[in-house]
View 1 (cartoon, rainbow, N blue to C red):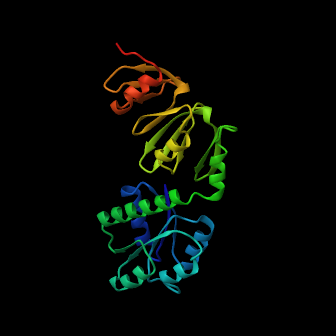
View 2: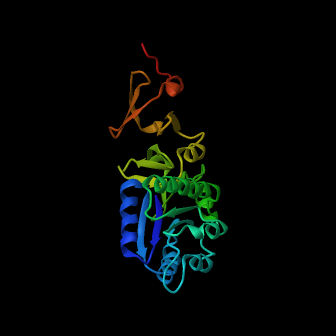
View 3: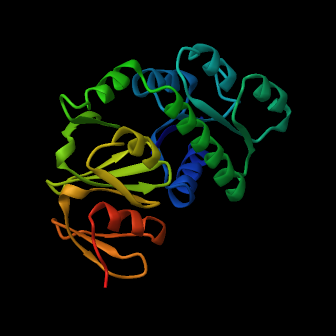
Length: 251
C-alpha cells in the first residue's frame, strides 16, 4: 500500500483528486488532505508518506518551498497544478510527474503506477539495518520470520506459516492461527529467505509449508489441500517436482 497526502489550498480540487484515487488507484491510501505548506510539512514529519500530490500555487508558501523544507524525508512527488509554466522547475526538483488540472484519469493512473514501481524498487533495495537484522533472526537457531507491515515488525515462528501468496508487489502470509499478514515485499524475497527449509514453490503465486499439506488432488497441475482446509493450486511447471519430493505416484 502506498501512503499519500494531497496538498492543495483548493478544497474542491483536493477532494476531487481524493475521489479519483479511491476509484482508480486503490493501492493508494490517502492519509489526509492539507491546505497549506505548513500543515503538509507537519504531516510529512509525523506520518512520513511515500507519495505527495502537490499543488504549486498556494497562499503564503508554494509547493517548491515545501520540498526545500522537507529534504531530509524520502517521498515521491507528483505535482498537480493548473499552470504548465512550472514544468521546468518541477523537473529540476526531481518530481516524479506533473499533472495539469483538470486531472486526466489515464494520466493519473499512469503516474501512480510509476510511483508504485519506484517506491517498491527503493524499498526492496534498501531494507533497513534493523529489518536486515530481524530477517537474520530467522536462522536455524531461532526459526523466526520477521514480517514488516505498516503497523511494525511482527515475528512469527516459521513452523506457524502455512503458505505465502503473491499479489503483485505484495505478499500475503497465511498463518496456522488463520491470521493473514500483508507485507510489501514480493514472493521472490520470501522464496530466497525460506530456501532449503520446509517450503516449496508450487505455483507462480504460492509457496507452501509442506508440513501443513493434508493431501494432493490430481488434476492438470493438481491441488493441495492444507490441514486448515485451504486449497492451493499446483501449476504444471511445479507438479513433477512436488510429486518427486513427496514420492507420490499418480496412477
